[in-house]
Length: 289
Image (tube, rainbow, N blue to C red; front, side, top):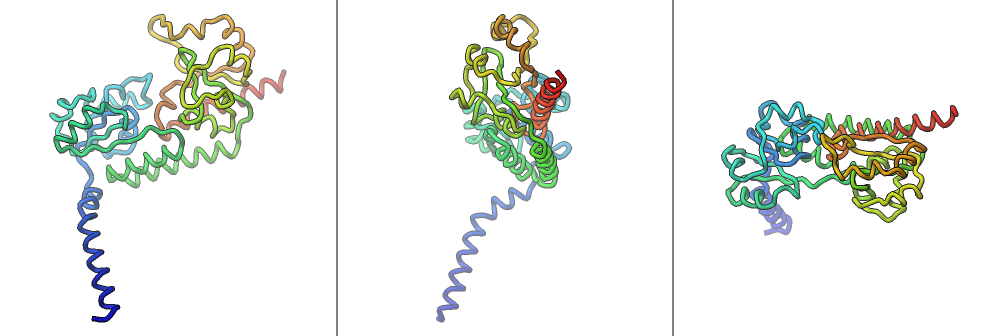
């Protein structure tokens, strides 16, 4: 047997083995799931944006909360779930979508029962957003729809990059929390061209920002989240402090609803646009003084 023939036979066997391993996965990828259940606020919204009509059966109850979900009105058209294994089992989905931090017991039990579960990690930057959009399109067999969303996202980011804002910003939320590098909100701030003071204060991810540190950093813009609760809450006391009120009057302040940067999606650009517009308005007002 010639060396070339041996090589051909070896390659043929290798290809056959590879196809045997990959064929089930390829077949599964080519077959669009017909009954999908999402258990996570962020996967809920990506699925609603990408899924075909009647493909998505259920989303988490949080998806219908207008304070947390951009697509709250749309979510009411789906069956709501509370992430319980027994309720999802009775829905008989052929695909369950969860976050990597979604109820671990439920995810483990559903897999043991033979359900296909796909998990999505939370986004900490726009590369993560792109990857999750593309992956959602792949597992739902809706690649063209995902490609359209990616094109819209990239166009929006390009527009921001073409006209970057200048200045510094501090996120100051309930209970004096802020966000730094390693968070989606920080990535949004970076895309606008602004500097987040959290990094200079050694805050990464999420952490407390003492009022004294906020005032000492003297940012050009303060970004607050939701400040109107249905009833009084101790979590809002930091906004009532006399020192904060006095400082907020000296700098620009803008409220970005939490729902716009809790999850990564094309609508995350709304947070960036609100932020950039607020800084542009501040600079315009300063020039006119």
